[in-house]
Amino acid sequence: MTSTEEKTAIDIDIPDDSFVKMIIKTGGPNIQNCYQCGTCSGSCPAGARTNYLVRGIIRKALLGLKEQCISAPELWYCTTCYTCTDRCPQDVKPTDVIKAIRNIAVAEGYMLENHQKTAQKVLEAGHAVPLDKDSWQDLREKVGVERVPPNASRYSEAIEEIRKIAKKTGFDKLISDEKEA
Image (cartoon, rainbow, N blue to C red):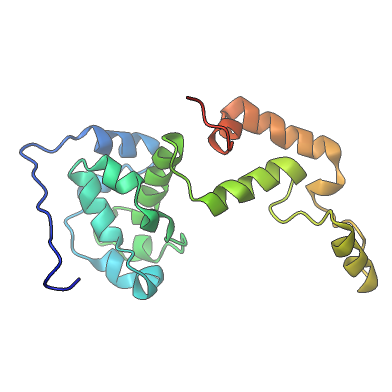
């Protein structure tokens, strides 16, 4: 950020703790242990290469800035390597906090397009990288392996079971291109 860019102050008299409660319930029970030491961000391999700051997301969450957390593209930069969790002196379990915030984000309609497309492929073909095209199958046969790999795409009943689970949990609606109005 250059000195000519404006920074906006966060105006919060009393932080809204409903988002923190939601995170605790969704899988980040130790978020309130965080005292912002920065060990998580300093340890993060994704943060070393991007603008991803675990500490920043956790701070925004603690301030009740739900919309800023769930709409941030960098929320998805975490590779879930658990380095931050291994090193956190307060047992915040930052990876679990990030996963909880992601779950909240998805439930509220925020998902990266490539994640959505991958999930749609799983429902469609039973596998994130379907190998159902003739060109793939021809290549597999040429290199001496079975035309159809031993994954769910070989078993239509397995694909149907995946679809049933997605429907029962509502995941099919979360990844649909057609959002309810």
